[in-house]
Length: 96
Image (cartoon, rainbow, N blue to C red; front, side, top):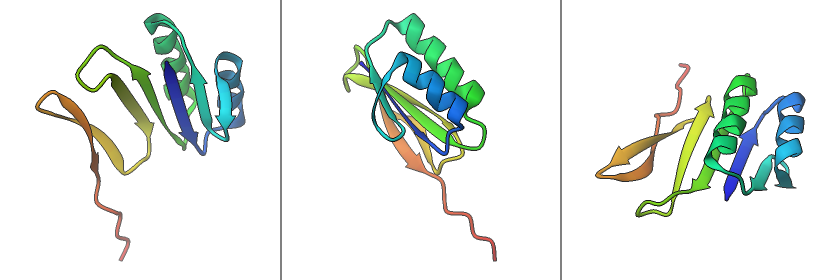
């Protein structure tokens, strides 16, 4: 299973995702494809996200049962912690 969540994505990317996946909520796409197709979809996301951000989650044969990747401007960043993939937060931008 694949889940893609996009924020501030351009309409052309949203349309491209809707061609491959089902949009169950605004910006949330779900589908079930092979690893090759998943990589193709992710390359479309990373190439077309522009100023937005995205995360893709998919089923994986690991201890967590899933894996994920992120792209774009977001405070959350995936980190490996003793074999588990967790999320770290960047500090908020202070413009003082």
